[in-house]
Image 1 (tube, helix red, strand yellow):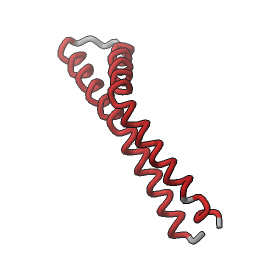
Image 2 (cartoon, one colour):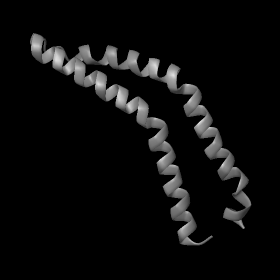
Image 3 (cartoon, one colour):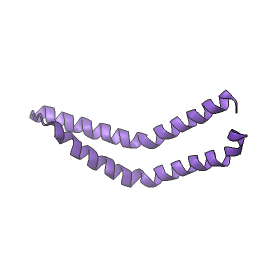
Image 4 (tube, helix red, strand yellow):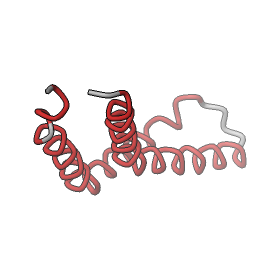
Length: 89
C-alpha cells in the first residue's frame, strides 16, 4: 500500500464525514444564530436557553436526513470493504 492510496482513503473518509455531518451542523448553526439574535434583541442573558432549540432542531434534522446519512455511510463502508484486499495486499 503506497502513501498515495493512504492519503486518498483518508481524504475520502474526511469528505464522507463532512458531507454526512454538514447538514446537522448547518441546522445547529442556524438555530443557534436565531436564538442568539432573539436573546440580543430581548436582552435575555440566559446561557441555557440556546441548548433546547438546538437539540430539538438537530433531532428533527436526524429524523429528516437520517435515511440519506445512513445510505451514504453504508455506501462508503461497502466501498471500503469491497476494496479491502487491495488495501491489505
